[in-house]
Amino acid sequence: MKIAIAGKGGVGKTSLTVWLGDYLARQGEEVILLDADTALSLGQALGLKEAEIPIPLIQNKELVRERVGEGFFQINPKVDDLPDKISKQVGNLKFMVMGTIADAGSGCACSPNALVKALLAHLIVENRQWIVVDLEAGVEHLGRGTIEYVDGLIVVSEPSMRGLQTAARISILARQMGLKRQVLVINRAPSAFKLPDFPGLPPLSATIPVLSSLTSRQLESSSVLGLAEREDLDKIAAEIISALRG
Image (cartoon, rainbow, N blue to C red; front, side, top):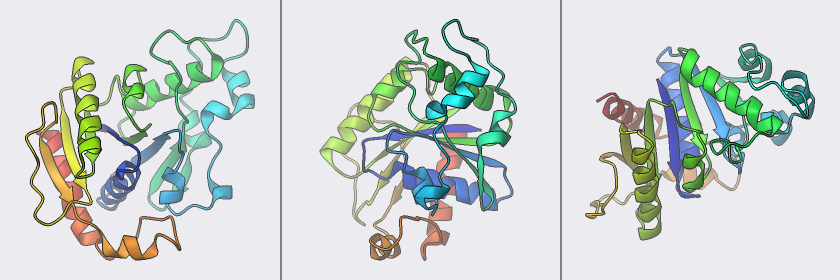
């Protein structure tokens, strides 16, 4: 299954990407996590040091030249070997840094976009692994072809008006693109949280409370793995996946 995760910046979509991937990998699934966010924080959330995080594919000029060329370039570059070539093994997960596709769905013909989009299509359409994509914050990326072929969308929000407004815009735009299978996750939800009647939101599948072990370590480590609440997060991950599968 191929899943994209979207939401306003700072709502926890990158953390949820890691928790879902970690849960699936511990169930014996083969999982690839893709960082397609400008912030490029997925590697840090996995516990990697900055020097250990691979260069974003979109910035790998040598590889882009090799596969796509310059000027009159190859529009169908060879990409089937790239998942093994540029991915990094982190525990039971494979991790790849794509970078943000600029205008990839609007006819942009630049070489880096051509290679990144070709690899995304290969991973999402042809591969059988679980793919979890951490998307750029906001809604603009949804018009750029990034999630054209995914099976489902997880929209993440915090319990705030701005977060829910962005979540609704993301959901509406994704439905307009034909992506009907969507769920909403509320992160840092208070115990008595009740979702307001807000037009455009996808159905609520799970709430994640404030995690005390994550709060206490945030100034010491960027990793969101190995938390004391892992068992609770596993249950939440299972609920989300079940909701996506329908």
